[in-house]
Each structure stands twice: as structure tokens, then as C-alpha cells.
Image (tube, rainbow, N blue to C red; front, side, top):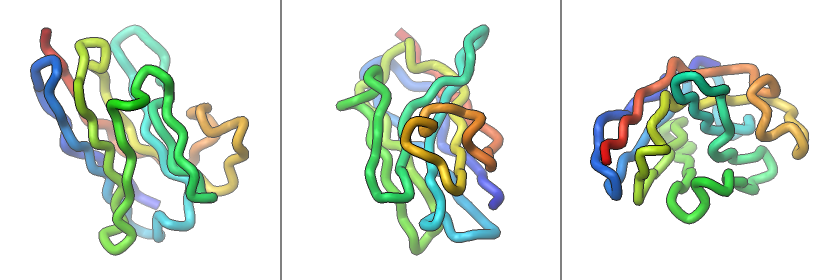
Length: 124
């Protein structure tokens, strides 16, 4: 699976952005797909995942502000981000994996495929 993430940019605090992750090579519906982010000097951290089971899980720090969705016809996963904060500034990565168990959903090393990342900068 090849993943390409795009849609990042510069936005003021309180604003919104929608990231897209377009897949090619395989159908995303057969994979667990998620979003991670990496801020300067910090480890890559979990944001949200759409598990193969159909369940979604959000990190506490984005819950209620971010929404993951998927368009199977376009083989694309989206991350709608609202009420953005400066702390959300990071490079955002989409990822996909096969058989990922529940306890590993938030672990970057559980995912086999990664997009190239898209920068999100939130100004105060």
C-alpha cells in the first residue's frame, strides 16, 4: 500500500483543517488506518485510528475536536481537525497496517505502511 498525505498548512488557533490520506496499490478498507503526529523534539504520537473492526479510537488530547472518516470509493482516509491549538502543531502522518491487535493500535511500530507526512502549524 502506498499512502500519500496532504492538506496541511498554517492556521490560526481555533481554526480547522482537513487532512487527506490517499491510498494506492491496495484497498484501504481491508486495513487498520490511523493518524499519528510528530512535533519537533518529540516522539511520534498516536492521534486516531480506524480499526479493521470498524471501531474508532481517539487520543484524549484530540477527542471531541478531531474526526476520522473514510471514503472507500476514493480509497482515502480523512482527518477533520477543528478547534486547533498551538499544541497540535506537528507533522501528521497517516499509516496503515494489517492485523493489529487492540492493545497495539497506538503504537507506531505496529503499522506497516506510512505516508510522507504533512505539516500542520497552528499559530496563537
